[in-house]
Image (cartoon, rainbow, N blue to C red; front, side):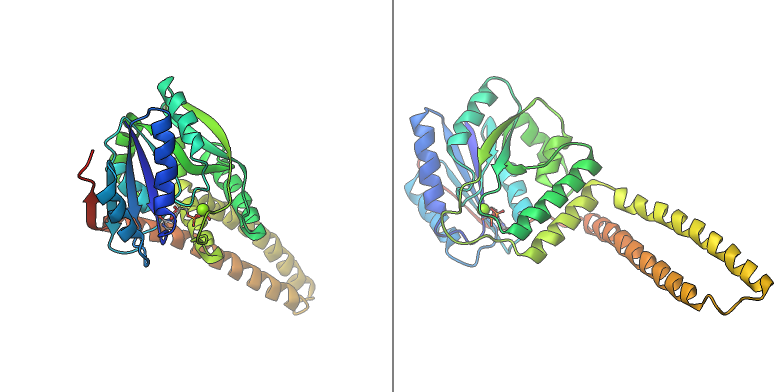
Length: 306
Ligand code: UDP
Ligand code: MG
């Protein structure tokens, strides 16, 4: 059985549409499936829609969060609820073409344990977001040591992989974690379709925050850069120090006021940046050490019918 995990945040208009589209495909291709809708604390009627689906259709599981915990948490909750032999994670807005699920499933049948969806086109994303995404993915790819450009959350995972992910206590970045675990992988390219309804749930600020927290969860390189910068600054200040001393000996002091100011500002800014970067890591450690759950489920629903 294939478990279809669908994170949904304020997607009342998309829930039924997504179900119907995917359900039809599965029936057509003779694949047994279950749907796991994770309502990430939506403010609209998303959960009501899911309950309604569960009362009329078979093989539906609905999970409702007590508040919005973010897509990563929604995916975690979905993975924890998987009953199938493999699971696919797909967006509710149908930007991930559902037909690809069949292609992914066939590859899984051939023995691949992770089938990755890779974006061919980034859809009608805002220009700024596209550029930001490019920088973010090239940074994270370089630091984490694997190519993640154009990767997405659209993936099909074997039961084994799902179990491994379920055992990981950390608040990982789903896309990166599924690279990290290894296994027999293959990629499938897809074109990002325009959103069917509603609007994107990401603000620019949200995306920047998301990028920062994922980079710091994936690599300590930024923190190491700080050390390197510190040494570079030390070398520069030694040179300037000697220079200032010579000036004093020759009797040309006072003149270097400008240099002093520039250096002070420069060092000050480097220190602030460094503290900021270290702060990110401390914040992450703090988050993890508190050991709070990744999400809180306030209610669940399951369809009676098979
Ligand atoms: N989503 C979620 N929690 C959030 C934000 C988004 O579960 O806090 C879901 C959303 O319902 C959708 C998917 O994640 O199914 C992708 O979100 P969206 O389409 O807004 O992102 P984009 O496609 O613009 O990257
Ligand atoms: Mg979308």
